[in-house]
Length: 334
Image (tube, rainbow, N blue to C red; front, side, top):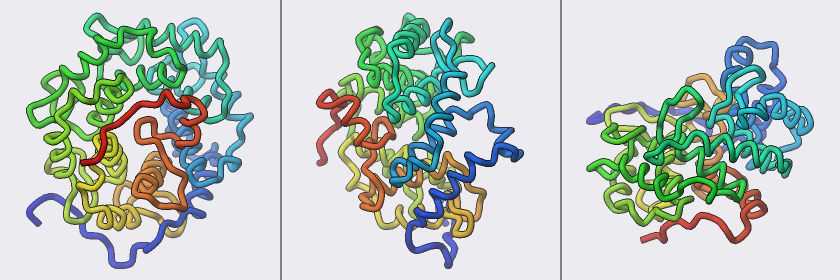
């Protein structure tokens, strides 16, 4: 092979095993005594978001206990600092604050206190150059720019930060190849591109990217196997089926890639015994890759799955209810 890639197995499932995926996500939430569940406490809030969103897209939200999840979210909320943690007695962080807000929006369970606290938390994390720290310890990353503006957009409080400097910081992270990294002069990476394209879409500044150059860089992530990698000379991974595809959707360039080959790669990453998606065929499944496998199939037009919003990675029906006509606009296909 000219580039690093994988060979798809001959016996991979030829269709999406959605019933098994729903059962897998339900079993993951119920396996609270398993080693894997205990060791993943540090990202539990995001795990709940991944599982709930995937089940929403699969028309099976009732497989999770809404009351228990909302109680858990409240236990992770720090009313003094304002944000949410991944688990009780952990520090608040923007990553898990966004996951909590997404769950609360999905369940239509936002309160005025949650909203005002989160807005205060995010305001305190914006830096003079427009960037955002993830928490009180000060790490800055373009992921956190996306988390901040996505939270505030869902809360309808976007104007409570300096949106001009927020957009300018993201633009300052644009590279000569059209992509974006974790900060200025950092290597372009598909995950960071999703965050920066998403943030600029929310901020109404997507016209400032070079959509032709960036679209070409994203399309070059597709390998002969059909899967996408996150940057050159890396192996494909199901999660990039979402990061790359959603960015291309915002740029109006979904038609620039080989969709049937990508679908084959995604289907090959399913576990036909347990359900769930892995990063690559034959690897262990997890809720993270399961959501992004399901969401990517939704973006590819699978009618068995609810439509997904490419900016927020949430059911479009939820975004319609929360934002109505005030939704981010992406570029027209051409």
